[in-house]
Structure formats: structure tokens, C-alpha cells
Image 1 (tube, one colour):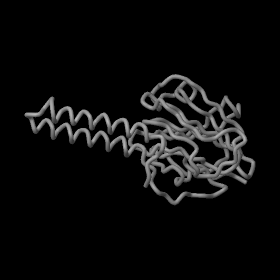
Image 2 (cartoon, one colour):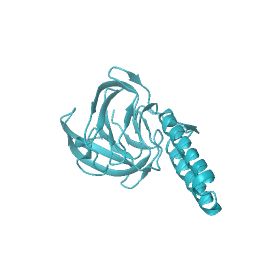
Image 3 (cartoon, helix red, strand yellow):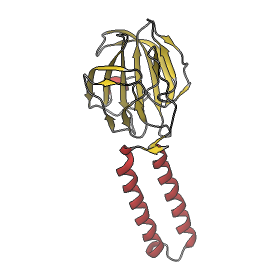
Image 4 (spheres, helix red, strand yellow):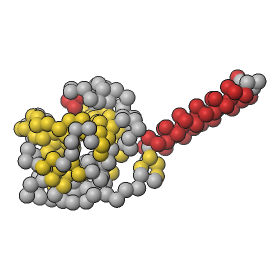
Length: 221
């Protein structure tokens, strides 16, 4: 396991603030109250541990298959439905949505190998990630990758009420590999994936996913 570079500044800042707070408590605020000092130290360690675990990147054997759509994020499947995709395809698609809690790994990965045909970033609101309008009104990115067989897969990084910072590492025209890191969303969010209607869905509502590992669907030839 390693720690993601997106967390370096936050972890360092948090560590320094907590260290300063504990030193202040030890020498001045609670110098005569050992219980308060111990409780503050324990609370500080727990808080720092939670922040560190948020930026963890576990070692995984990635699933690599040209005919399969792999989960771009860790989380829970909250939507599987046929819907109108109005930004790029402008036609009906099969949508799979993954909700990412603050306890999930928050690295985002390319669901297929291919070429990025479309990318756009939208500033927006911060509705809760499971709100029906979050995919069209929240801060978000839209990425379309054309797979090697010519099929295009669209997915969106969506900010939530807590997640207010989206990072991405792709651009239009860039070749990408399945399972490769394409971005990061800080502190809880959602990822939507839009597939052809004839895609063979392999997951169910409520199922937990592992980014880069779980097979969401298989594409038809």
C-alpha cells in the first residue's frame, strides 16, 4: 500500500496542527490534567489515522480485459437504470452509479483502454452525491473513452456535499490504459458510468465495488 500524492499537503498540515495543539495542551492548557492530555492525544491519533486511510492506495491485481468495463472507483452500486444521456451521446444509455463514502479508497481509474475522445470540467453545486440532480448540477467532469473495439464509454466524476475537490489526469486525444489512475475525488462523492443499452451488466444494486477490479459489464462485439 502507498499514500496518494493528493493527500501529502493535507496530511502534513493536519499532522503539524495536531502536534502543535497537543504540545500546547501538554505545556499550557492541561499541564495539570493528565487525563485530558491523554484523551486529546488519542483523539488526535484517530483523526490523523482517518485522514491517512482516506488517501491510501492499496496494492491490487487489476482486471484487464478489452471486452469488460471495470469499476472506476471503490464504493457501492446505487443506480442501475436506462436513462437519457444528454451531454455527449444525446440518446438513451445504461447508467451505473457508484457512491463513494469517506471510508472508501478515492482513486479513480479508467474503466477501459482506449483514447479519450471527450473531456469537460463543470463547476457547479454541492448537492449530496445521491441526489438525482447531482450528476447534472454538481461540480463534475465528463470523460468519454473510445475502446479498442470502437465502443465509447462515458463516465463522470461528481462532487458531493463533502467532496469539493476533483482532480483529473487525462485530456482529449490521450491514449489511456484500463485500470490506470485517471483522477481523485477528495472526501466522498460519486462516479456515473454510461454504457450501451446492450451491455451485459454484471453487478447489482447494493453491491460493493473495487476500483480497477470489479467487472461492471461486458460489451457486445
